[in-house]
Image (cartoon, rainbow, N blue to C red; front, side, top):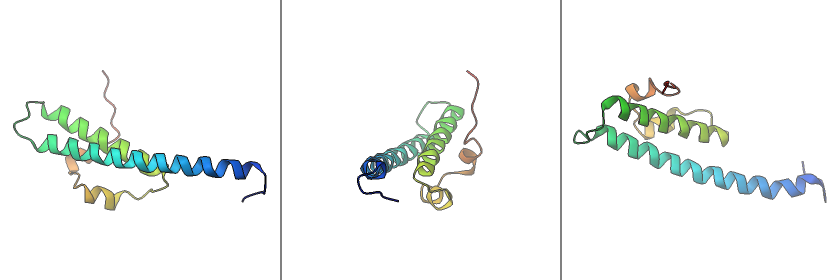
Length: 98
């Protein structure tokens, strides 16, 4: 709904810029999932397993939030792409008290 010389004409370029930033954030979030899952699989990493699981779950949660900001609501294929284990998915969205 564009009105010549109207507010919509001014918002459109801003919205396009925001979509570009969201897409960039999605790539960054995907790389964070990869790093967290690599750390989880690294048996030489002395980090406690619970901490590695929590880090991976947080990375997946943030990735899902960014996807939803881009109006991608079905995460199944993306999570399959990253091979997110069930034990990580079980912790997605869980907030621990500190």
